[in-house]
Every structure is written in structure tokens, then in C-alpha cells.
Image 1: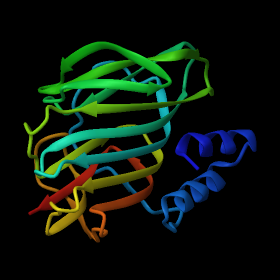
Image 2: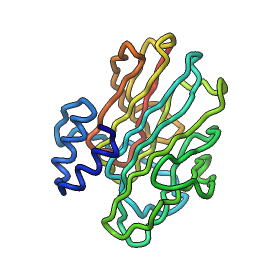
Image 3: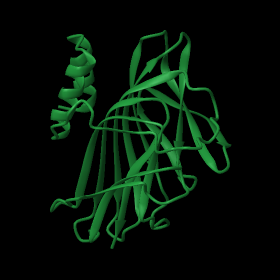
Amino acid sequence: MTGETLTWVIGAFEMTDEDAQRLWAAFAGDAVGPQDGIRDTVTLPRPLGKRQWHRTRTLFEKYHFAGDGSYERRHTLQVIEAIEDGVDSYLFNHEPYADRISVAYGGAVGQHYEYGGGLVSDEIMLGRTLQIGQRIPIEYETHFAHGAHYPSEVRRAVRARVENLDFAIHFAPERRPNVVSFCAWPDHYDGEPVLTEQLTVNDDGSAHRFVSFAEQTVLGFKWAW
């Protein structure tokens, strides 16, 4: 079962938020309690490129690294819900050195933005305009130039409350780091982690962390070779 199919099942059976959260946790391979969330690690939010007119209901994020340790791509599956009428786009904030953004499902790449003291975003124009309460899944990838970038951390900012987040990272089996941690930071780019949890790296080079909800935080992975 894919994340998109699970989204359809949840919608078809009109599941409550609590039941949907448990189902997403089971899909991610985790058992979580209702308070297993992360919030308020950001004390000075950066300005928005556009006002936020949606709520993210589900977020699956996976980061891929090549055999030489370079950043290869970032895959995202996200379900957004309109909190007002007329929502026709989503503003995706990403790494400033990204090569390009491609949308596999749910829309197309629109305008490019640079704002907020170094933040870089691309607008994803949705496949249909949403009215308040309506949802749409979008699936997209961030691509990076081959062999060009060798970060030791990846971050994703979360502003308004997001529920059912699954973060995964995959390294080539021949180039696995010695330590991988799931972290929360106070900023998109600056500062050291304020929360750190060391993870187990599987034999295939992957690690992941499910979070039942997040708000006003920056989440991701940090590692050492």
C-alpha cells in the first residue's frame, strides 16, 4: 500500500483524526501515543513568503544520498487541507542549492521565491482549486546536482500544526554514517539542535522517525561519518 492509497482509504471511511493518526503510525511501523509530538522549538519565526492558507494533514519525507555521500534527492508526499476558499497553490520551502523541483502528482511547479533572510521556495500550483475543508495529496521531489553537495544534516520547517509526519533517510549501503540522529532545531538554517534522538541505521542504509504532530519547529536528521 502506498501513502496515496492510505489517504484515499482514510477519506473513504471518513475516519476521525485519532483513528487516522493510528493508521499512519502503523503504516510507518511505529506505535505512538497521542502526545508524541514536537512543538515550539522555534522562538523567532522567519517571515513567510506568502500567507499560509492551508493545513498539512499528513507528511512523508525521505532524503536519499548517493554512494559517494552526496545529496541526491528528497521525496515528499503531503496531504494538504484548505482552511479558506480558493486555495490553488502550496509554497514549498527547500534547500537554497536545490537543482530543480519536479511534481509527480497533484500539481505543477509555479513561481520561484527568495525571501526571509536566505529562504528559497517554489510554488506548487495545485491540480484543482480547494474550498475550505477540501484536501488534496501532492507528491514531489527535490533534485540536487550529482556529486555537488555533501551536507551532514537536513532540515524541514513546520509552522502551523502538522499531523502524522514520517521522516526517513537512506544512505547507500556502502557509505553508511557511523551515527544518525533525528533532531529539532530553532531555525531553518542556524543554530544547534535543541532535541536529539539517536536512531538505528538498518542494513539497507535507512533510518526513520514517525512524529504524531509538530508545530512551530524545524525537524530532520543530523549524522557523522
